[in-house]
Structures are given as C-alpha cells and as structure tokens.
Image 1 (spheres, rainbow, N blue to C red):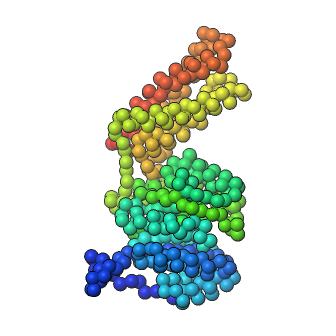
Image 2: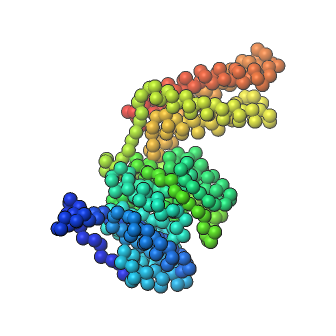
Image 3: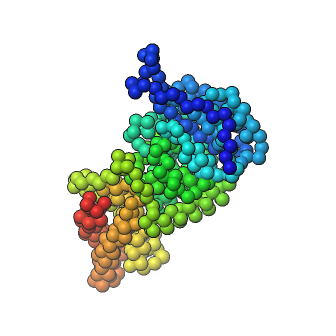
Length: 411
C-alpha cells in the first residue's frame, strides 16, 4: 500500500518555443528525483534542504523531489510530510514494504516527468554532477545515465574494505556478465522515463540488486548508458548490511544469467533507442585485436609460469589458455568489434571457444613436439616455442572472430 503526501501540481506545458506569452524564456522539461529512505529521521531534513537549494540555484529545468519512505519505523515519514508541506517542489510517498528497488519502481513507474533519477539520502555524491548526469537524457543522446566512482575522473574518499568490495563486484560483472558499465551500485542514476517504464516491467529485484539488473537489461537491449565521473565521500553512518548485500547480488547475477540463457534477457524497444555497433574497418579491428591479444598473451605467460611450478607443461598450458580465453573473447567483443550489450554474448563465448580449442591444439602440439625432440628443454625454450605457436593461433583466431563470430550480418 502506498500513501502520497502534498504532491505539487506539475508545471504547465509551455509553448513549443520555450517562451511564455510575455516572451520570457521558461523551463520546458521536468526531472523527478527520488530519494529513497529508511529510518533516516536524523538526516532527511538537512539533505532535502541541501538538494532543494542546489537545484533551485543551479538547475535549468523544472524539478520534483520525491522522498520515498520505505516502511520507516522512526519519525522519517513525519519529517518527509513536513518538508512536502513547506517546499513546493517536494512531495512524500510512503510504502508499507522495504526495498530501494520497490520505491523506485513505485515512483518511476507513475512519474509524469521527462527524466527520472534517484540519489542516496546521505548525498555522498557531489551534486555538481547532477546536471551532467541528466543533460544527455534530456537531449536524447542517451537512455540511462549513471554516476561512476571508478571513472578515471572521479574523486573518491572511502575505506579500503568498501573500495575492495566495489571494485571486485564490478570486475565480476564485467568478466562474467560482459557488463560494459563501470559502476553498478553508485546511488546516483537517471533515465528517460519512457525507456525506464519498459525496463521496469522486466526487472524482478526490489532491493539492492535492482540497479544492476536494470543496467544489465538495458545494455542487453542495446540502450545507451552514459557515465559521469563523480566526487564521492563515504558515509561513515551507512547501515548497509554488506554481507547480506553481497549474497543477494550474487544470487541476482545467477538469476539474470539463467534468464539470459533462457532467451529472456532483453526487452523490445523503439529502434531509435537501440544501439548496435559493429566496427567493420579491418585496420582498426586488427589494431584492437593486437592490443587485446598483447595483454592476454602477457596474462597467459604469467599464469603459465605460475602454474608450471606445480603442474606439467601441458596442463599449465591448457589451464592458462582456458582462463584467458573467456576474457579475450569478451574484450575483443567489446573493444575490437564494438558489440555492446548481452545479446548473443553466450553464443559469442561458445563460438570463441572453438578458436580456443584450435589454439590449444596448436600450442599443445608445439610443446609436445618440443619435448619429443628435446626432452631436457628448459622453460625459456618452452616459452619461445609457445610464443611462436601462439602467433599462429592468434592469426587463426582473428580470422575466425572477424569472418564468423562477430561478422556484422550475424551480430
């Protein structure tokens, strides 16, 4: 059950030229910002007033701040309704059940705004990034936008534990789910309302994994996701149960993977909202493939040397190739051939596995031949033979990827 308090009237739609009858320029777009809260009586008023002051002074569009109370048991609802009564662009919504995703689904799904957004109540993310977050959405350039604490332009202050968990989680998303976005859980996101509504119908999670599932679904459906570097300071009073959140996220990833394998990992959207990029320039592809190959070869050699201390050469070679093959296919898919989203990602990995088997045959055959011809050959000679065999396997792999796996007519 949902209660709503003091919802302000939406601004009247101005003339198409963006001026009123007196010829004065007026705001023409509406952005709704949701602030989900649970037992935030102590911080809510300060944060909403700070957000309201910032937007009223700097934001060039109409805005609506919606405080979404997730079944708080303290005085949060009373504070929210008082703010809604005092500040014109603020309203309050109360939900009887907890869950950040549930709150966003409730408000975003019924919003009349052009763009919907949300941010954490602690305002850990610097508000100067909000206009750059929503501007590409209002212009039609992008469909979703996220703040990224892992962007090279970001300035982040937080403890080593949270930093490690965040980077590990996002690395896991990129390696196992082929995610192209860098920061799934930053509480600073926005989307075009018409697109968000279509995605909400397919998103199942109502808690912390909601953000990640929404982004994975959007990317698989070919939508543009814009990233904004942010200034972010960790809230020392955060009451997030990290262990519980991590476990729920892992369960969510497994569920999304099962849904993708079942062919239900995308939504149909208007063609103008879709983005399917396949680079066809052979020179650019070759350069991208060479760069990815160089990094993967380095990783392979380091892994081989480490494994060789414990297992025979053939086993070390097979394990090192297997570990780097998945990353190589994912990196070439994204950076060499420009294929984004999760559409056909599993098929690409399986077909890329054929190139892996060919590489395994070539390199294993080379090692076996070396040991047959020179049983006492050292590790240095093994590496030289492996590099030569890998060069041949690399050429075969590039031809297969370009002419078959990622051919434009198939991708």
